[in-house]
Length: 200
Image (cartoon, rainbow, N blue to C red; front, side, top):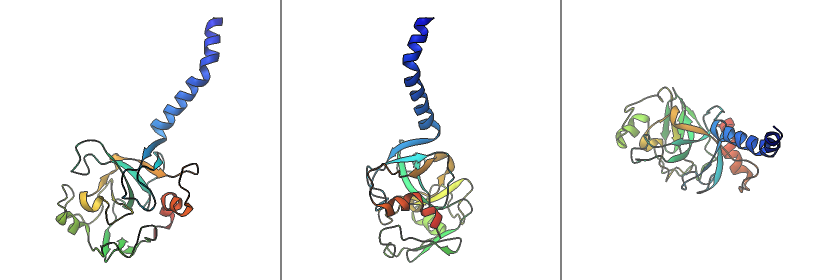
């Protein structure tokens, strides 16, 4: 019995830490790495961030999702980091680079050259036809349990304009940049963590 107590005295702390870490990574937050330049200037290629799995999804939230089964060019799991622009039931349109959600212009000061996004104009119907969406063609609204997402670096981002809506079940969490990360630009941190509060 004394031997068991002695062993437990040595092991209880590492076992507890492993259990807490497993619980954190499995149910609360997951570390992830940004891949590619589609979220510049706010997130860099290979930047390390956290995906929080228990907080609500807002318009303007930056999310990570499994794009396999969403982007038809993929055949294996790949994580995409994008920003939610439209929630279920929303109508999202773009006219000369200005995005409107439910008829209201959204703030775009967090993106690179907001007035120079190829002066594109589109609706869900035109996007689905031009880019040959595999699902939800000719949609007017964002469908139930799905989201419309865009990259911040709009001119090069592979996002919902090209592959359509992202199902809720594919979303792994909301991206947050914490104070201990290498990012030194406070405005860029706020553009990731807090922009959803200033969406309109």
